Image (cartoon, rainbow, N blue to C red; front, top):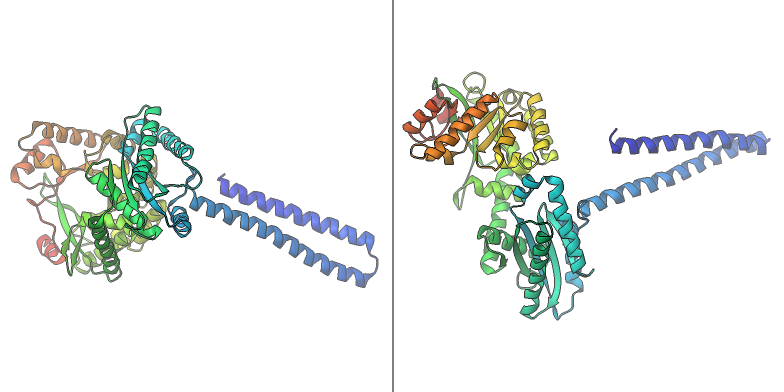
Length: 493
């Protein structure tokens, strides 16, 4: 029995026992002590009100205890005991209000580089021990005045009050780096870290601005593969533009001003249509075409993934139905979802609700997720896919071959399709290694009764070679460009 149900059952039983004992013994006590009928009636009324008051008090204690526990879980990271994002931001605001004039606040973000590989190599339990060990060393290094938080799976934050002199800032960052290196050596790991640093007041005067600045500096450090980056005016301008784009993306989703294109997929043996992949597009009024990888990243960072999926499913169903393509002309409709959405239980529940609202599309739908997202937690991924398949939904792994444990996906995930990444197809004609990899993927996948689709087919030679290698299906510019719904309808007819 789940712990939540067991706890609820315990409370119910205790309440029942208390109520029964109250009724039995209070009635007997009144019978012994009181003989007058009128007084007995009054006593029974008082006894009833006492029962209500006492049980209301007990209920108040139980509910407040439960809410206190829930609030604590939301504010503190269960694994490390450090503050989570919201609690860290609140504490940071308090420090800013209380700091002395001769002090500045340094906010340092630290990220474990390549931690996902470590997860797969050591296993999640051992990798978690590395995180716990690091958080313990942080507590040993700093006193209670220093704020420490875990803001992501492998992202930590430290907020440090220092004197205005620059060498104090350098000392603070060096301490954090040395702590990381010590932890890596203690766990016998060759780990590197990236650091992003924001300094108040030049980089912001509120907790939200400082945390945003530190996050931007960290992203730049990871992008440039440098050890440390300080926030600066250029980054500040980029962040302002980024936040403006997020706001405009929210409006575009609210007004449903994004659009869809469809790329056909074909059987290589018969050249017949096997399905279409739905792709989202954003034609910005000021910036023009905004690449999907750019605004999808913004959506992931700002909790908009579920809204994008809802838009894609609703609009695709509407367009395909209005053009009369869904019932007979298109066998399969593939929709991409982000890694953030796939690895969130709540967001996947929302996705299932959206799919169930369009039964005409649901029985032809196929969900696509990248290989690296599926590998985040292989057991959890397997459970999610099984739930999708029970609803009649097919599942595909995109960009196959780019991860580090592709064989695990074939062995452990009940998927229907793998899509060979375009990087192998682009050099298929003149690279024997790519040919060997593609052949191996086809052979292994078909051995598990999975359909194999090649992405990015741009020449007749690539198509012919894939056919000779036994690939099932293909998509790419040579076969068909992504197209709007009216052109798709004209092409298929």
